[in-house]
Length: 95
Image 1 (cartoon, one colour):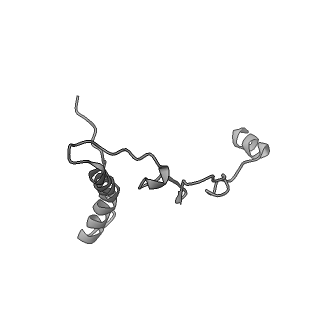
Image 2 (image 1 turned 120 degrees about the vertical axis):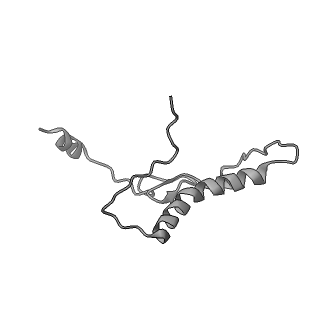
Image 3 (image 1 turned 90 degrees about the horizontal axis):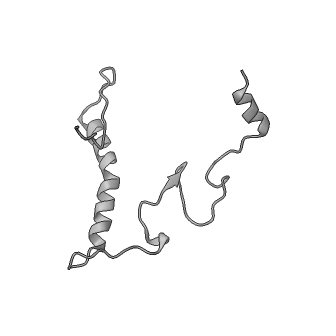
């Protein structure tokens, strides 16, 4: 069984993309991976042992929700989550 590719690229013949656009898309896809590899390389000791990160604030590429980095004690409002009322939820399931 063949392994699935890490990245799937879909070709849309109706979307004209020049070399600069393609280069930008590829760079933006690889940048987080390059940053992670650089951070990992910075933590490898000469004997090959990896220094673990034990402080969350020292991590790079922290997760985000709605482009808000998850740090500290955030509320749902801080990350842009809008709460739905019971009426809103009922309306979703009405036929």
